Length: 75
Image (cartoon, rainbow, N blue to C red; front, top):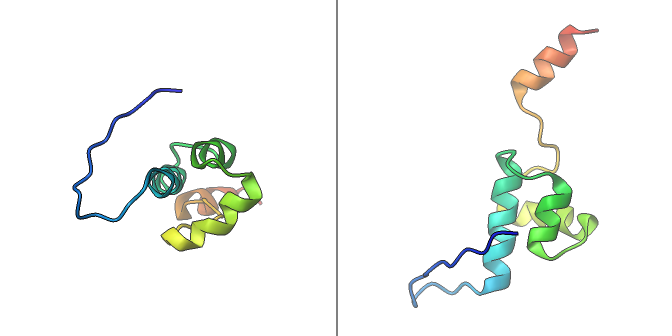
């Protein structure tokens, strides 16, 4: 894994664990990470990670409308 050093202003109440979870959720949301990869980054099991996605307004079902349309057209 790559190591990233991020400077966050002192007035932001965000610890390392929270930052990793937020980043993992958002990278999952945009399709940069699979569920397993995002869970690993967050330091959680897949089940635990899927349960915290709602805290970041991220859907567990990461399927775009265009993908749904494309797949529906195949039937």
